[in-house]
Structures are given as C-alpha cells and as structure tokens.
Amino acid sequence: MSEKALKDLNAIPGSERRNENSSKGNIAKSVVSNTNGNIEEGQKKNSVNGGETVNSGAEIANLEVEYIESENLNDVEDVDTSLKTLLAGLDSKDWVLVCEALNNVRRLCLFHKEAMLELLGDVISLVVKSLKNPRSAVCKTAIMTSADIFNAYNDLMIESLDPLLVQLLLKSSQDKRFVCEAAEKALVSMTTWLSPILLLPKLQPYLKNRNPRIRAKASMCFCRSVPRLGVEGIKAYGIDKLIQTAASQLSDQLPESREAARSLLLELQTVYQKFYDLSSVAVSEHPEMGSWENFCLSKLSPLSAQAVLRVTNISREGLVIGS
Image (tube, rainbow, N blue to C red; front, side, top):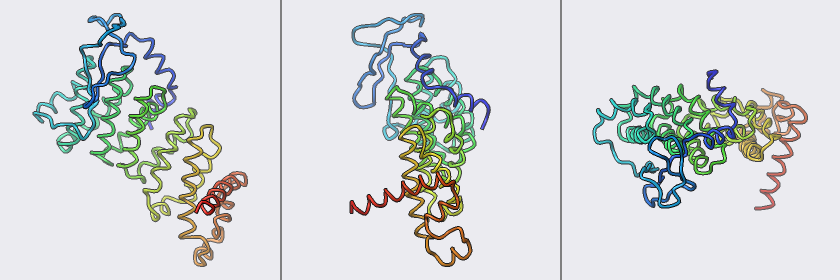
C-alpha cells in the first residue's frame, strides 16, 4: 500500500465535511435521479464567477447532474471519440464536464470494457481524484463509477484497488447520507465481483486502522468476502488466521465491527465442525484440533478464546431455542 494511500486513509471524515462547508463550492445545482427529478436538499445558487454563493430561495438552478442507475445507462454515441476525450474530461476543472466523463466511463464499462482496458489504470487514478472532490455531485458520481468498474473488470483492476478502497471506506464512513449509502453500495459491489482470495489481504490492514468507522466498514467487507471463499478456500486461506482476525474485532469500539466478527465466527464454526470436529483422522494428524473449543483454545489467547466461545455458544443456543 502506498504512503499516499495511507495518508488519505488516516483523514478523519469530519475534516471532509469542514472542507466542504468552508469552501466556496456550494454551487447551485439541481441533482436529480433519472426517474423522478428530486433535487438535493440544501442546494444553493452560485454566481457565474464562482466567487460567492447566494441562497436562491426559489426554484433552483440551471445546472443538473443526473444520478443514473447502471441499468438505465445508454451506450456512448461514438466509442473512439469517447476514448480520446475521456482522460481530459475526467481531469477537467469544470465539474459538470467531470460528471459527464464519469458517466461515460460507466457506459464504456458496460458496453465497451475491452476498448477501455488499456486506459483503466489512468481512469481509476482520475476516478480517485473525483472521489476526493468536495462537491457532492462529483463525489457521488465517482462512487457509482467505482461500482461499475468493479462489475466490469473484476480482478483485472486489483492492482489499482488500494487508493480506490481507501476513498470508498472514507466516504462510507461520513455523515452525508446519500454519499454514504452510495459508497456502501459500491463496497458491496467490490466484495461481490472481486475474488476473495485477492481482496482479503487488501482489507486486512484496514481492520486495524485508528479510525473506528473505517475499521467497521472494513470488517463488514471482510465478513462478506470470507463465505465466498467456500469451504476449500477457507481451509486453504487458513481457518486459524480467519478466527484470529475475527476474534480481534469482537472487542472493537463500534457495534458494526463486533456484529461482523460474530457473523464471521459463526460461519467459521460451521465450516470447522463440518470438516474437522471429531474427525479421527484430523485429530490424529493434528492433536490441537478436535472440538471447536479445543481448536479455539489452541489458536487464541485464553481471553480471546473465551470471548469467541461465549459468542458462538450463545448464538448456537439461541438458534436451537428459536427453532
């Protein structure tokens, strides 16, 4: 992970809000969806010079940015022209042009992903730049673009993931709800379309980040990814490593992290008991194995093992009573 990415990661989401509120960037615009044209709350109208912002107090705005759902995107009119102008549009100082270019990236992902493959690294770098933009319209469009990139390129973009992942974790942790929800949706897309064997090592460092909200979002992604390994994948990755990771999240500050850890431990317990527990062959070859309790005690510190066993036993008892 690059030093720049780590620096971005340690940014506190609140600072982004301060930057956005203090800047002169609260430009008047109507942000509409493709179907209903609802405008974003709290919009303000900006002078042509961009020097000062003025409350319009009436019907707002001449400039519109559409948040188009992926299934409603149409193909680009000219592929070659779109590819030639794509990077310049993404790097434009005109935020409306940037949003148009981002939507063109999404269209190319859907209809011409092979044609854009050579530009993918540069495209992702500029998408990351847009994710850092204090203007909500640009930021949300970039988040939606990230989700479409995951869907289109899967593991082909894994080498460019780090800076993108940093920003999505940050955006999913902030208080601006419509940006947060879009970022969470993009993270779900990431865990759906990227191979867990490649994604889990990328997520691992963020589980120890000093920002508790970042840890929580990373824990949720980690928890969603592990079951996609499958039984053989979990065994190959190392069920002991996964248990240790989940155990470390049980005492986390935020309930989202703790709940993700509990869900992961129940998944691992099911896998363990199905393929290891009380297997005479496994026990003879690996004496530290045997029951789930013995395995936890052999792989974790006494306190961590007790916490894991308490969680898994109580949860299993609840399932039995509920059935």
